[in-house]
Length: 226
Image (tube, rainbow, N blue to C red; front, side, top):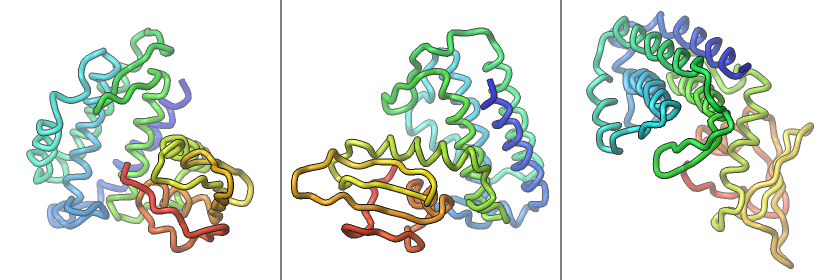
């Protein structure tokens, strides 16, 4: 599956960049509120193991409290230990994904979310790419692979589709268009949001405030947290 190769490439990019971190820099704040860079690296590793569970038909996490406790436990580790864990957990995910299985089967994520098993590699790709950006070590939304950005915009637009708190919205980067939000209503204009793809994916993923985007037909929609 091509997405697995993309996950591998993204993981290699993250590991190469994070190899420059030292003990002080891993304890510094990441771009995610309340998390250090150590928290982000710990989450990337634990997510790989969680997706192994998903592919194996086990619960993704024991529960939300255990998920959070594992990240807090692992966050203070030295950089070398963090990177070894990211590398080894990525290998476990790759090994599980290599086991012959029915990729059309339905799997269950956390909070009761279900999806096709075939989408799990892309979900892992999302985790690695966006959390690399969250580390704040020089990898930006503008550096994300173009294919990834287009697919992630489509993925996030689909997640907000039908959400009653999001007005009918048309999104465009000037080349591609996506629709999201609740269904259109008579007399309610559709909001058109336009701007560079990197800013669109930043807005949809909660990593940018959308100030670089243009909204026509209404205010820039306020998006609920993912």
